[in-house]
Image (tube, rainbow, N blue to C red; front, side, top):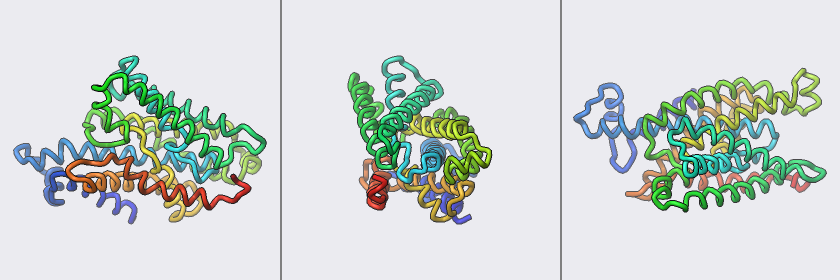
Length: 323
């Protein structure tokens, strides 16, 4: 309940805080009794409501994707932004928009799914070399290398046209600014499908957490379970990247907080991640609006400032045998 209350409060702040400060009461009035002649109401209704809704959906998607990745890989360092998923999706989107000329989000989101899938396959393929298989540190290193490669390709594609670079600069750094109702309308069916599938994976992840042999003895088909979870990750992370660009560390930080609150049961970790992640993302977006006025920082810049130290701490906690 406190998580929902906190999320609701952050949503209200997202409507009120910005380059033009608007009172919480006025923000609520803009929702309940919209007045088109009131400039504050127009700002809240036309700019901040879509931005907040996109933040809610993107945050939920990234939080669930991170929890699913940590569960299916049994790797506490897993995150779509660190293991090449969002970078692969971003490269595929840049290719679709700049080379093929695909227009609306509903068109290039399919390329995001393909790019995200490619990122997963390449990272796990590289990390699987060697006798010990894909250890957490090997996955993190392979993810960093593949992410750097995809980011370089995306940059090369975008630099072909400076006008396109200026138009996509907010998306490239990861931002929920300058998005409208059209993005909300195009992304919510994908997010809803991903959330429903993800929440249904709690029992699967609990079984996988016990080890493959135990999971098989409980009647789980390991390949099918991993395929289902992988499809959820691609669906959620690909849609989030298509809407807001590559945003990192939300999927890393939030599942650890959810696990500290709810314990090891993924039937609770997943719902908590779905509530806490949008609160973190919107909080980072609000911080980005006020840290460097009159300009704004992309939300991904703020999440890196928060998640980077935690990632370093998690790496330092790993035992030498796990390196």
